[in-house]
Length: 303
Ligand SMILES: CC(C)(COP(=O)(O)OP(=O)(O)OC[C@H]1O[C@@H](n2cnc3c(N)ncnc32)[C@H](O)[C@@H]1OP(=O)(O)O)[C@@H](O)C(=O)NCCC(=O)NCCS
Image (tube, rainbow, N blue to C red; front, top):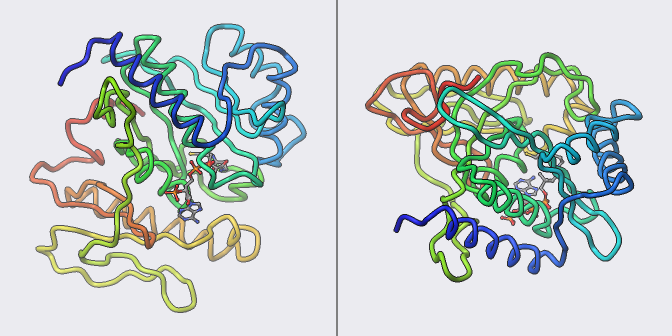
């Protein structure tokens, strides 16, 4: 059923409120400099590269003041998560570019991140924006699950070294390859007038030809794949952030391997479709060739 923009915004808002209730948080726009200071501090705690962190307090405040999207999740008076996005434009459309999101480490896995993203989606829909875009590091298994399985975003493009080489406490010394994903705010709305549990379906292991696996000692290992394989599986390490601290050379080996696997698959006209519960990207052979992860997806020209 095609919803009017107004009904879509109302349905997204209901989903967001339900998600916040389930996560026992209140998600709201950050209105004061005290709140944006706290959000900036939360980001700095997660990305520990510099005192200012990745979202300096002044920038956070200016984005909020200028009508961009700056929100936080509160438990009582305590800020436990924050998220920032700003206007994006392409020749095809306007969209919300979600630049950064983080949840305090001690409350992760309690669906606070999910509540933040659903609030962001409702804000975009209310603002008349149909799409929200963002990038994430494909090596971070938790984020692959969060984005592809829980939020069910659509992958658009694999970008080599999107930000250049990073030394920000999370990406130390590594090329910043990123997956660009897009979220159609109308996706996942199954029951437009009631609550929707449609977002967040899980995917179990699927059969396919393993192109990249993890060896018994945790190293990336390419495997032979038959030329007529229709589905490829590409592994990521269990904990790339830990490897970057403890075994930086192995972390770099994973960066090179996952990049090579994705680029080989994309050149072979495979498209990323999902992420399995046991840590593999699933890429399906497409009948249309090309260099985008999803042919025909809105936003394939970004980049
Ligand atoms: C990404 C982030 C915002 C998610 O916040 P959150 O509150 O933990 O999110 P949720 O609880 O809604 O969902 C997290 C999901 O990841 C899963 N998860 C956590 N660690 C995982 C791992 N190592 N492998 C696979 N899944 C994992 C959780 O089980 C949960 O999924 P489920 O509800 O299906 O079980 C948070 O992890 C974070 O702040 N990370 C650091 C900053 C960052 O990387 N931001 C970029 C976001 S793209």
